[in-house]
Amino acid sequence: MILILVGAPGGGKGTQAAKLKEQFKIAHISTGDMLRENVKAGTALGAEANGFMQSGALVPDALIIKMIEARIKDADCKNGFLLDGFPRSLPQAEALDKMLTANKLKLDAVINLQVDEDELVKRLLSRGRADDNEKTIRNRLQVFKTQTEPVLGHYGSQKRVKNIHGMGAIDEIYTRILEALK
Image 1 (cartoon, one colour):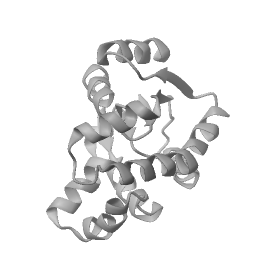
Image 2: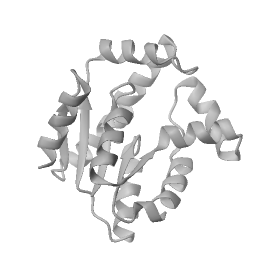
Image 3: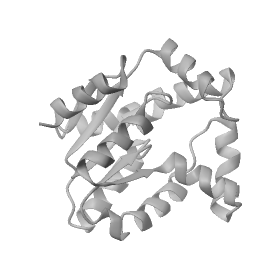
């Protein structure tokens, strides 16, 4: 099973991805986690990405695509994977489509977690991450709206998008996701 998890920052992607990984025994590929790990480890990719992350901007496609291309070839992706935080732009979605086709893989669904903006700000401020201050959060939400939402249009035209109400208890949201995947 190959899934994409889409939603604004703070929308619960990481939480739901962990549950999906466990249930379906697929790899969870979080570009955000991979980027933070690279920054912490002081890698060349991490240093380059850090400047963009600190300002709330998206890391350039070329950096992310290079990372994902290598990652989907890892052994733990053999039975499927869930992409969390990728694709975040239409060019990334198009590049992902090409990667999947080249590897004879098929996208099963795009899960779109929908959460009210005020709730997103509240959730993000409560996480306590260094890059989560209100100004950065508002910028990231605007970046999401302008650059990521076209991804939903792209996959919507392929009838792959499952819109999920992302408010409420974690288990309630997860049940909605499972129902949509049936």
